[in-house]
Amino acid sequence: MTARNTDTKEEIVRIGTALIKSHGYNAFSYADIAEKLQVRNAAIHYHFRGKEDLLSEIIDQYIDLYHSLDQQLKAVGASATVTLEKFIERYSCLVDANSICIIGSIASDYNTLPVSVKEKVNELVTLVLKLVEQTLASGKKSGEFVFRETPKTQTLLLMTNLAAGVQLARITGKKDYDTIKKAIIRQLKEG
Amino acid sequence: MTARNTDTKEEIVRIGTALIKSHGYNAFSYADIAEKLQVRNAAIHYHFRGKEDLLSEIIDQYIDLYHSLDQQLKAVGASATVTLEKFIERYSCLVDANSICIIGSIASDYNTLPVSVKEKVNELVTLVLKLVEQTLASGKKSGEFVFRETPKTQTLLLMTNLAAGVQLARITGKKDYDTIKKAIIRQLKEG
DNA sequence: TACAAAACTTACTATTTAGTAAGTAATCCT
DNA sequence: AGGATTACTTACTAAATAGTAAGTTTTGTA
Image (cartoon, rainbow over all chains, first blue to last red; front, side, top):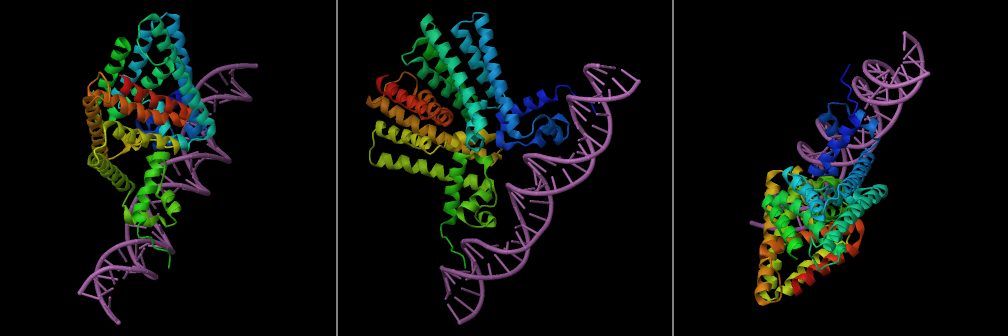
């Protein structure tokens, strides 16, 4: 009768992810997803018992994504510079989409989440920090990057600049994000 | 009949502010405030027509607070170092309270807010950035701080480190925030 | 091609949320 | 002391939200 979409589940994840990044986790309901997908509310419940299960899946997919990204870049032997550029580019895209990074969005709602989801968020954050740290350490070794802090500390500084940079851009405009981005890159390149 | 509290309105603002910083704007309802205050739901509506009016008042109070803080510190002739320390201390307290800064929290829900509130958020952010920029510029001139970027750029880097630092601390623990805090201060002091 | 499983829909319930209208108690003012 | 004003309460309503149960259509497979 109605058109059945074989990848409804993937679409739910896609729309849910977009909604978290643009409106926040506690600001959307299954009805919002159902409307965008042109299905009934119960169809969302068929694929994901509850909102927390959907969030859990979304985080899982981010973890998978970062694992894949890392493997791909390592497979082609990408330099630290290229790797970092790809990473930063993801944040620039967020600004253009009037969205913020999923971790920053979830951080706001963190205290409303069940422990199982909190643990997954921790896993994702730890992974991302580890990958960036590896990139910075490798770049320092190769002479591509110059910085005095430990790779771990430099990673924390870089990540917080980016994450809050996209949040700030939403309020005061893209220019502030661009200023931050340029400063980050210049500092890493010139020490 | 029941105990009338003359500062119910202030209490509502206080509880609302705490809820935004701990759970997020879209994660609490008037019922949550009513329960904590031991009044009925309608009492909250009496003081603030709707949730957006409450948020508006909360932001107004932050704007007032930063104006006062600035005036006080200028009145006693506080150095740039002391002024910045006071500012950073506010973020350290947030971490201890398992909360995040109100601007970062609102940034997540930003796209769900009416234009009138968005403008007020912008006003608050612009004010805070201006005050920090003045402090950094003054500290540079006095030789207290050493940095190569413009005061404006340095302010953006500092603010994003702090704002996302408290968000990150919520997920990975206070140690990461402390690392960021120390690095910020050391860099400003040693260049 | 029949049957089972998957992917839904319809139809419902219970709870939360936002909000209003009307009434009441306390306090303020003249 | 009486009337107005403030600060509520009780008692609603309408809509949104989360979720379930049972039935229907579609699709893959034996």
